[in-house]
Structure formats: structure tokens, C-alpha cells
Length: 129
Image (tube, rainbow, N blue to C red; front, side, top):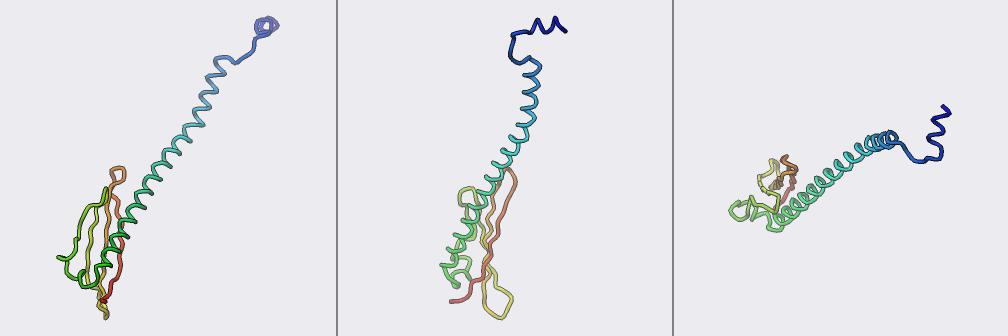
């Protein structure tokens, strides 16, 4: 034991084993953090697409409302399907079953997020002027 102390006397620093062990522990701590960060980025990108799709659906619905009830009763007077960037928009109209003459307008926006199809449906009632 005395001889070992004499050999290492005055030498400072870490051994190779200590450095490797510290790197392994550091890697084990960082790996879950990196995976969590990557997952967060993907979720944020999906949320951004959902916000954009909502804006497209609301804008389309407002455009249809501005055309008025009479124009919406004749599908030849409005476009019922189109593309808006990465989004496909489809519009359907039908009369509501009830005592009032209401038109049910459905706007469906579809898109792909990381290869998976996504959709958003917005529905509104429009009455005669």
C-alpha cells in the first residue's frame, strides 16, 4: 500500500475508468431528455398544423356564410372541394330536419401529419335571410 501511494504521490487528475464511467452516466441522463425534446418538437409541429387547419376551416365557413342561404342551396353556385396548401377542404350542405328551414353546412379539412391522415370537421347552421 505504501508503494502505491509513492507511485501516485503528486499526480492529480482522473483515471480513464472514472472518465468513462462519468460519460456513461452522463449519456444515461441525457438520452431520456433528448427523446423528450424530440417528442415535444413533434407535438408542437402537429399542434401548429391543427391551428392552421382550424383557421382554414373557419375562413372557409365565413366565406360560405357570406355567400348567403340562397347561394348555398344550389351546389352549382359554390365550390364544394378545393386544396389550400397542405390541406384539402370539402364542403357539404343539407337541410336540417326540423320546423325551421335551416341549412347544415359542414366543412371538413383533411391533411397528413407524419404520414398519418388527420381531419377537422366544422359544422354550422345557416338560415334564410
